Structures are given as C-alpha cells and as structure tokens.
Image (cartoon, rainbow, N blue to C red; front, side):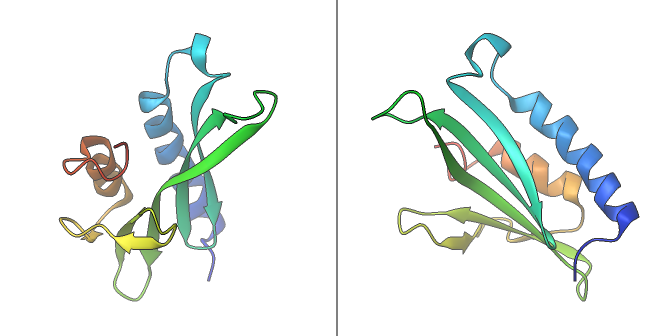
Length: 115
C-alpha cells in the first residue's frame, strides 16, 4: 500500500531537507549529485555520477532504501552491497521515524552508505 497523500507530502518535505543538507556544492553537481525517489512505501536515495566510459551519460547508483512498515509503525533501513541486493542495516535495522532513519544514514557509522 502506497503512502497517503498527506504522508507523501510530509515525507517529501523531510527527505528534501535531508537531501539538500548532504548534496555536494552546486558547481560539481553536474558530475556528482544526490537525489531520491519514492516507490510504494519506500524512499530510495541515489548517487548520480557521470558514466566513467561516456561522460555524456549519467549513472544512478542506489545508496539507501528506507521502507515504512505500517503494521509495525516503523522504518526499515537497507543498504546495497556488491551483490546489488538490499541488506538490512544491522546496527539500526529499524527506527521509529523517517527523521531518525535519515540521521542514521547521515552518520553512516559503518561506512555502508557513503563508503
């Protein structure tokens, strides 16, 4: 079940403030940027870079997925490993709020999201 209209707007606002706080300086955003997309009950954050083989193309790499679980009223955090599959972020696999989850991503204590 997708977010309600109210939830969508609220989560967009929270996520956009977060994204803006971690984006690189404006003068290099053509080469490296951070974006997000909402898919169903998930918010996926991407790193966008120039393709290393063709600088006229962009590569979009998934960094983190935060998924809201309505039955548990919590957010689950996932990171993508080399196998390109989502894995639970073990130190904090679940948090109570989106803001809490984004703070875990920003801190990235284990270097899973931003290396």
